[in-house]
Image (cartoon, rainbow, N blue to C red):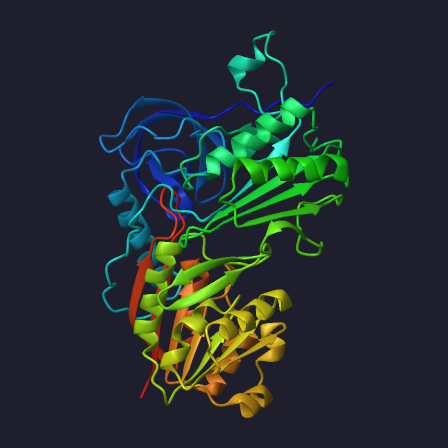
Length: 469
């Protein structure tokens, strides 16, 4: 006998009250708190409960009975399918309002620390075509809508685009994405057409076979373009003619790269990347600093807003030519090099050795000679012995991953006792936790959210902490 399926709990005519954390909305029914994705505050919906806990539930929308007065029509035809830009239905000015409020709520409720009034959130001046990098996946069988599945004449054709949320082997075939400026769409669409005309195979994500696997396009603020294609088979007789044709069709590409990846995963950091034509890098420009970006380099994906973010960092840090600055989690040394000319010395530490090499190159090409960069696990590298060798910091800048800082790193920062700490975070929840650990010795004197990713719930926050007297 089969297991009896639990009956679904359906709630009707529920008013969506407000926006909550992580991009979800919150409703209240008979004192029960319910979190739901895909809604807009003010919607009236029918809900299906998907998860029930003692103090809250999660639900999905069964139907929308009444649209919120603030709800707007999505600008992208793939909205709800590819998983990106989930806040398109919310006006941009409301998006930034919700993001700023979430930052303050997290700092207060999780950090339990005294806060000044927040500085106004910095919105992104562009809320479409703001990204400088997009990564696409080729698939032998594109994702089909319910309508297409019901049509026996629709064939399972290959496609190139973005993964369907929660389905590793399903890819939405994209003809126009609004996230990146041209020629991004033209390049992606050309590769699809060329491959189909030449009979090249697209990667089968289940069978792990096929030639075309991944496509990365970078469009820099300098106007330079990098294209990197990952192939699932080492077949030069097919790879090289395709790259030759791509170069001929788009002569404006400054760096045309390729990599052969026969592994089970898509990561290429451990693989050798070949330069087919042009240079093995492109250049980004931020203020008076040039950054050389290789195929494995990290760089903020919203170039214009990255400068505004780092301007806030520089304003909060306020280094002088007498100050030693430590830039922890320095990445490719973007912040370190951006502020170096205002400081006596900047010391950068980062886990990824390749990123540290990029940071050193970026100092060299800009004629910056007062930076030092070190690779290794932060909690192991940043010790009091390290500080005695490289100088007591007056200012510490931290920009950790979403998980925040390791407690040992926080302890070392407290022992170093800098005058100021500038904490840059992409996750205000873990930022709040870390600032609580610093609170006995440091007080928050300013903080400012910065929106790097319009139409998503993600937001950066920059906080300035000063030593208590």
